[in-house]
Image (cartoon, rainbow, N blue to C red; front, side):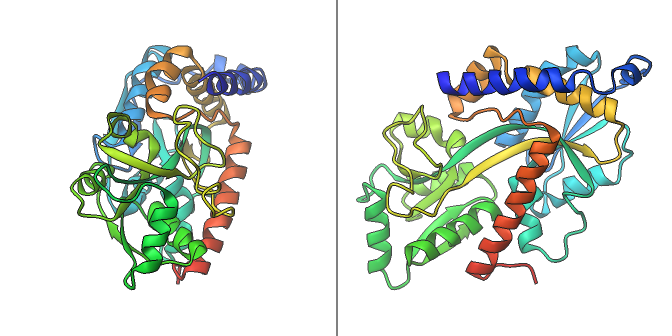
Length: 328
């Protein structure tokens, strides 16, 4: 907890001084915002992305003096919502809730993508990052990641893996290749469905976001075999990483960021980014939003977020090629 708070506060303070003055004169003479602002979430209502977008909308609305309205535009692995934002004016009245899947994985596995995540949009800042976790039922005979791999190696048809996004399907295929085993991906529409099927022993295991699974892990309904971060999570110190469990090359985080159209005026982008970081780095947000989910804020500048995004696109293209899922 202390490490997460220090990270958010330290980076947030550093960036605040840099960005607060950007376009200040232009901002002072601008009447934006003069009407409600929309946050378009390219996923279903009730998802983790949706809940977080609504949290930020509630906190930012009084800061902007206008309502922030969350709209869900799910479908096509996030592409429907993203195309909706692309079609709207770049006037600062529409914010995109973007995430690792539609902004980095889709370009690696979909040759017919109708948007360019690097060219069409610019990040305001990252707002959240969390590890993924490999889960089994609490009744499972598997007690460790080593047990999982051993069972997969002993099974001619491999193991059934539940996921709810192309990102996790690709991540699971990569993990299977590194481990020299076979996982058959079973896709679901949401994380809750994956966890329900794991609890009911309908799947050998699931790979989901740690944040969304934290409550069921703490309650003992699910057993966590490994997390996908570089180090163990501070809130779950007893769960080993995949790295320390024998796959040294493997590391994976899910992340989210707020975006706007690239040609949105710079003073508006700077003001929105400043407000998002203010909410993100507050103690109240850390206690209410991040700590219960085992996640953390990532208050990066737009340039830093773009660099991360470009690196992730390159990494997923390489991984997709390695596992035979590359865009054609």
